[in-house]
Length: 136
Image (cartoon, rainbow, N blue to C red; front, side, top):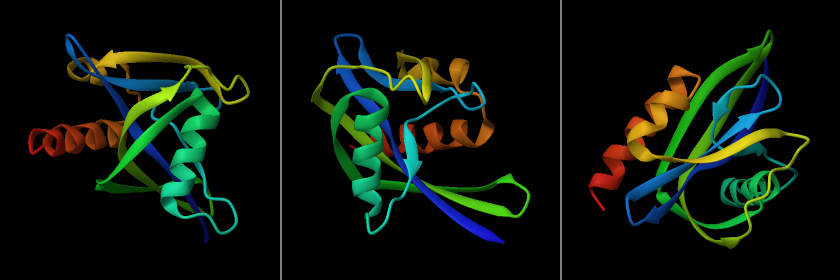
């Protein structure tokens, strides 16, 4: 069984109306989820998440590693993949999609994310995120 690892984050911003989450539509599969990507060489999980968010969205963020959750699934036969997600807050950059990997990108009110998110395991991550944010 081959092992793969990706890292990303639930990227948020605070507006006058509340917290918004950045969702991206992946070119590969067309599903709505969070920015993430494969760990390269000697990168830490945090470095991978920061790099992938910048590459896919054009945004710089501050990671909150107090929130860390892992999803494991099999994207294809013979492969098991771990995806590590952190929480993150935008702190700069201009939102710009990486057209090779992202077909759409939008800010969605935290309460509306389940309307967009494609996969159940991603809905469970956002549920964990909501609980975490209630403690902050």
